[in-house]
Length: 259
Image (cartoon, rainbow, N blue to C red; front, side, top):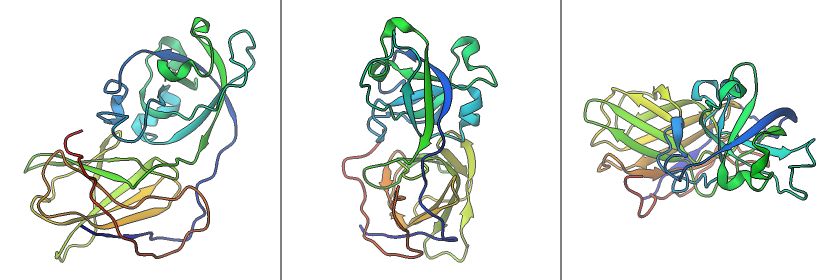
């Protein structure tokens, strides 16, 4: 199957890294399915996020609106526990942190998955000072649309988003329909919902990222789609100049069903 990708809207530069800020970090234990958390990522490894995940304090998580964003974190100002020559940690947020008072407003705090906390500092430290900043998300493959729900109510999990990583709007268009693009309602995390009938129809999706850029994947979901299936469209680039319009072939992800 083929589809055409398209970037619409006004010309905007690619997402750039933000300023460094101060915060603190702890770690938690779990596995690839518990790391998905409130962003509705069922399996963070299978959905392109790897083990680099973190729970964020309420000041950073913003009721799930920051799901998919990428942060760079470094352990600082604690030579006793910070590991020398530590590589930069690039976690994706997946749920609000409940690590006691450290996560209460207005504190900015990261609760990092245990397998990657070890790259920053010794476990014995417990809590470490860090500096962090937003950075572009560099993803393999395209934006993924996972179809969930039932014949009366539809949910779409949008994942593996490049560029800014977090999205602020999703629209769907039914093939061979007189209806224009229809906006989906944000449910929670990476999940968007609608009561508009979608089953048995070829679907196109348009995604708006938090930096105001658009990505459109035409005819990305075939008419014979089933609940639990995931389809892959075009993705944002994390750097370089962008063209207003372009066409490119696309593909359905092979071997991807219920995640």
